[in-house]
Image (tube, rainbow, N blue to C red):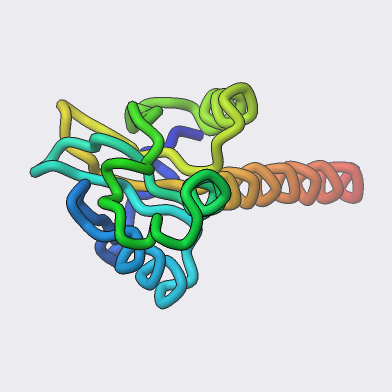
Length: 142
């Protein structure tokens, strides 16, 4: 299964921020939306990822005044991205190797989706359960 198949039919907008957004505002958005990361965009281009980890690392190094920093100062950049044609297992391997939990999906330089490791794991579990059910049905019919 590809990432494109996974994100097709999603109707909710991707929540983003700009590099100039204050960390306090971006953190409030993470909390309000109950999400772990925001793609940081400049126009249509993804320039970084701002995540809970970035908050923790910067809080440790700079203290509470980091809340007044711009997201561009603390975000993870460059953003690791995938194409919509990427297989789910390939994306999972990339996330594991790079120790990241979120991937912007980019086509021709424009972000068309945003997936988390939870999205990919759920997809994989659903597929395994479907295959197991098909196997049980086949065995019972034999």
